[in-house]
Length: 75
Picture 1 (cartoon, helix red, strand yellow):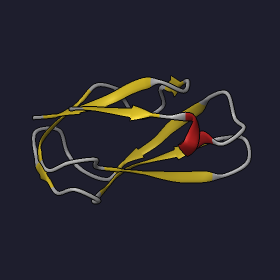
Picture 2 (tube, helix red, strand yellow):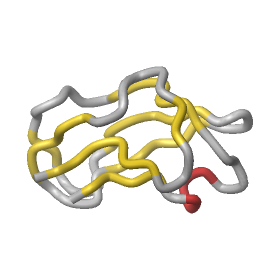
Picture 3 (cartoon, rainbow, N blue to C red):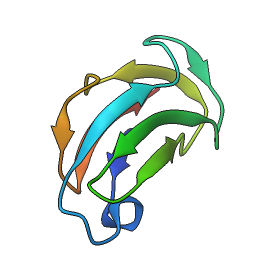
Picture 4 (cartoon, rainbow, N blue to C red):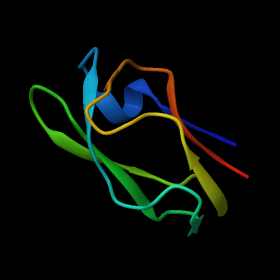
């Protein structure tokens, strides 16, 4: 399952920076677990796991992402 940054997470912002991953690539995550912190020009928001499984990071810290971007995959 793709971890997608939706407009619901970014609010009115059109982009965000991946400021910090809170987990490591290849680790087991559980549904609802905080995965990353994104920073917009207004706020810092957390992205949580939509499901449980092993995570593969797609975006790196410092990457600028837009709504709809896949930042990780959980299998």
